Amino acid sequence: MNIDRIPIGRFSQMSRLSIKALRLYADQGLLVPAWIDPATGYRYYRSGQANQAEAIRILRAVDMPLDEIRELLAADGPDAVIKQLAVHRERLEARLDDQARMLRFLQRLINQGGTVMPYDVTIKSVPPQRVASWRTRTDLSRIGDDIGRGFAAVVGALTEHGVQPVGNPFIVYHDVIDEQTDGTIEVCIPTPDGVGDQRPVGDVEWNEIAGATVASTTHRGPYDEIAPAYHTVTGWIEEHGHRMQGPPRELYLNDPQTVIAEDLLTEVQFPIAPG
Image (cartoon, rainbow, N blue to C red; front, side, top):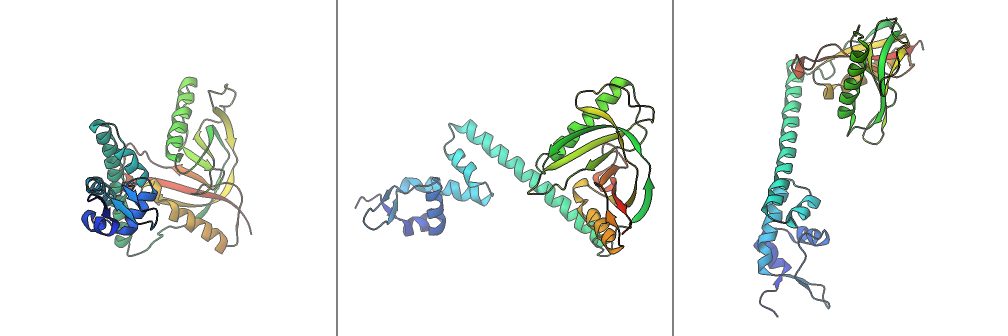
């Protein structure tokens, strides 16, 4: 036997990768055995593959996906490697930010005495509202960018026509949007009652949002922690014998450019009908 054919068991010890991992990496095309005995199916590696195995082990230790490891190992030159490593570093930094945000959220729950959903629900009447609005279909991966594009488009249309907003901006969620389902959102900025005859600007239109009786609560904190507020309101509607009648709305009561994320105020409204 060729002296540089190392059985998978011994190569596993050399590389500190389990036999199961080596088989997975072979199947994924990351670390293919140098030779497979056609009679027995035994896998053998070359000693020179130990460096590649160590690179894979390190990259998996920092949670780089297998498909990106494959691309990195096939990268043409150090500049391409550095670029891919930098992309993954940015991903880890974003994940660290998310973890820190979740820790702050947990600390707030502790400070509130362990109350997981500290929301009061009220019923109120909301009058019809003239708006400049922008609709799009979106999903969870794009919704943040789409909301930003929508508000930029609506503000641009108001500026072009010299119209001043007369209330808090809000979004109407015409569909449930989750990990499996996309849906339509409508980005709205209230306008004076007389506005409505102007021509549309791009995808921005002049509409009226119907008045309604709504069940409402206010969420304090980052936008991406708002789910418990929705859960509280929908549960309250069910418990009190009401029926949801129309899509929910999110009203933004202060400006994310002037307050920290923990002090953002968002009102969640669900139009309801008597049970």
